[in-house]
Amino acid sequence: MTKNQEIQILIDAANKLGPDSYAGTWLAEQIPFIQMDIRSDYPVGTAAVSISEAQRMVIKAREDARKIEAETKKHCEKLIQEAKDQAWKHREAILYKAAKHLKECAEKLDSGYL
Image 1 (tube, rainbow, N blue to C red):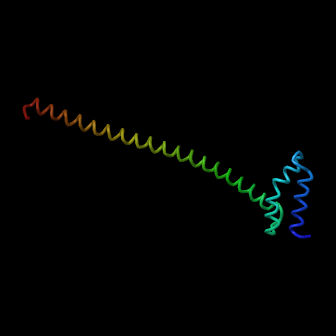
Image 2: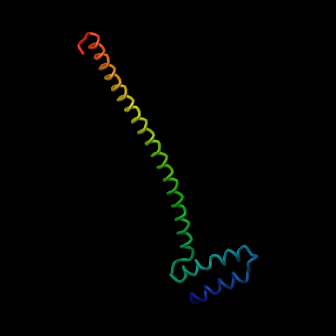
Image 3: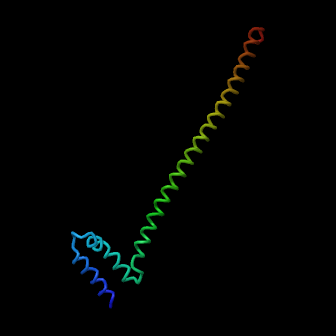
C-alpha cells in the first residue's frame, strides 16, 4: 500500500463518519498532521507528541519566569531598602556635622571671635 492510499483511507473514514461524529471531526482535524508524518516517514503521532512536549515546555518556562520575576522583585526591594537605610545614615551624619558646625559658629559669635 502506498502512502497516498493510506492517506486516502483516512480521508474516506473521516468523510464516512461525518461532521456529526466525534471521531469523524477529530480525525478530519488530525489528517493534515498525519499526512505530514506519513509523507516525512515519521511514525504517526510523533508531531503530536512533539507539540504536546513543546506546550509543556512553554508552561514550565512561564512558571520559571514567574518565579525569577518574583525573586528579582524581592531582591530589588531589598536593595532599595538597603539604599534608603544608607541614605538615612548619610543624612544623619550630614545633619550631625552641620549641627556641630553651627554650634561652633554660634560659640564663636558669642565669644566675639567672628
